[in-house]
Image (cartoon, rainbow, N blue to C red; front, side):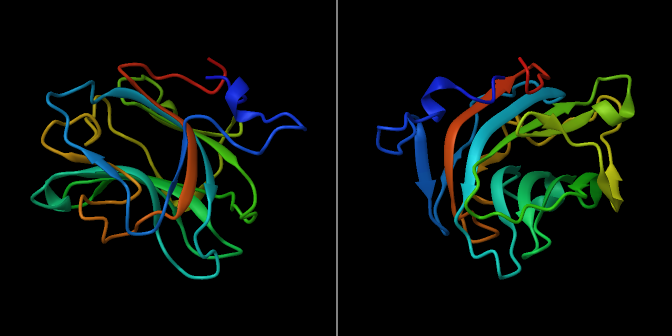
Length: 201
């Protein structure tokens, strides 16, 4: 996916607005339960984000998630910023009673004024283990991860994303928005079902 869509680059003379954008305030968000299963072994999430949360406090600030209504032990996928400045990093996890997949960046994100383009790719049918879950930030693939937090999906592992039994949320872990909610601007958010893309497509 192009990391600089035309609508994301304002002209010097125009007001600084971005089409297809919204502000999610802490305690709010968007939720939906799919009518049927999608592809649970291949999908791509892409979007621009500018975090507005309090970077000085420890919190999980969730971009998107999917959780079974009976609780995380029945299945949950989460993609979030964690920690506090100067050590805020990005992590995704798949959980079902224990963490089956967990990947956290060694890189930290310290500039609260910066827009970030984030691509997360679930590709569990990939024969290369390290390619089964991938991140791209501002078009660059992330390859350095925190010790103890580099656990990739098993071959063919199904994520909670695209499970029609799960509540899918932008801006929180669960549907009541009480847990790890986001305070952020989002723009040009796309979800591609059944394709494992990269930031150049």
